[in-house]
Length: 226
Image (tube, rainbow, N blue to C red; front, side, top):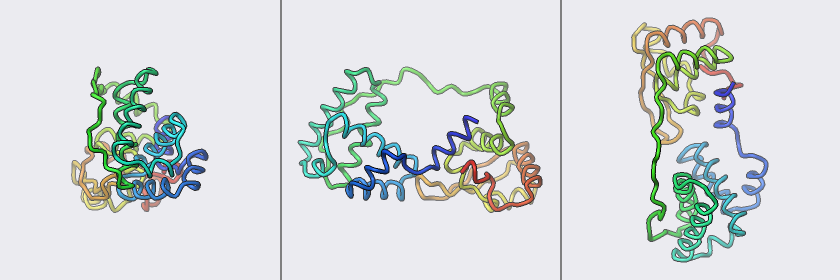
């Protein structure tokens, strides 16, 4: 269920609060539409969410910000950084928020002359699950489609939003030819480019059984997960 919720979050549109900002501000609307078209839906949502928080904390309006010069914009972001770090937000989070906010200014031709002032310090590494842990995750999946989505993410290294966009044509050649590992042709949303990844034989076999049970092959992941 957790994976299903995550996939829904990646594919949903803006929340009511952010939608109001989008509709009220032409500056935000143009920026969001560009991010969505050239980066990814997830990036656009995250950046606008950060920007909405920035507006509330700093008590600013989008129309005011686009009138700033680069030096004024940088000073304002420095103030934001200080406030966030002093309130207990991690430096890694603040660093990512900086890039989101800098993107807004850059889009409106306000180029910051200095780099991100937040020196990010990673104090942990991503944990790679063991085979037994991954098996437990797969067994806990609430439906065959969720289990299949997890396998694409785990074994093919795919982004959740890209999994939602897979069609039968992405795997048709190797799946029907019985080739293992099976090639997956992915039209990546983030970079708007095509790349090839692979799924192992057991995942390909499970995919074949899954499609046979569904009786149709237009999309691999059903609408409720996309």
